Amino acid sequence: MKPRVLIAAALAGLAAPCMALAASTGTVPVEGMPQLAFGHPEQGRFLVANVVWLLIIFGVLYFVMAQYALPRVESVLAERRARIEGDLEQAQAAKQQADAALSEHQAATARARAEAQAAIAAATQQAQAEASAKAEALNARLNAQIEEAERRIAASRDQAMSALRTVAADAAEALVARLTGGADRAVVERAVGSELAARGRV
Image (cartoon, rainbow, N blue to C red):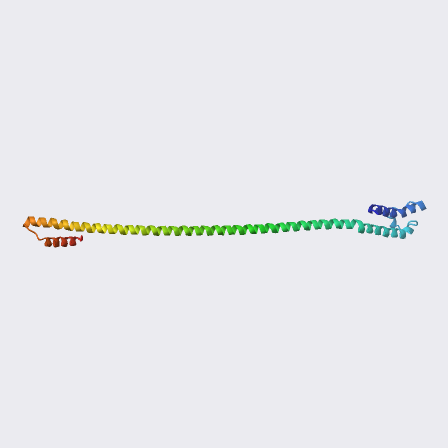
């Protein structure tokens, strides 16, 4: 039986005592609720019947609500609760996935930054090492060239001093021979050597 049919039957049962009372007595019922007309000569005797019908109607309504209406409401609420819980679980899973992706992205960024810094440090060290090696090679080459130039300068100076000593000795010998008519070569060379030594050119 459908709930609407049960409700209509309950309302018809509730109206039956009043209709029977009016049909049997022909008197006008009292105003208000007939169930509370305890002192009325005609309606007071229907009090027990009204209470019984009231219990029957409430029983029928309770049965209808318990068997049809409330289960549907409960199923709707359960379905909505399940859907909300499912949505919350999906949202929680999505949040966890987003947190995991963010953590992985941060870790990848940190690794990339560390690798970049390590590569920059290695490149800097390699460049410094290469520059130091090139500087050392250049310094060694320059030192060798300087030493070679100093040797050449020293040889040229010694050669020039030898030539200067010989030229000075020849000039002094010629001058002494012109002035005195003769000159001793050994004496002239010693005198020229002493003079050059006094001037710091030996």
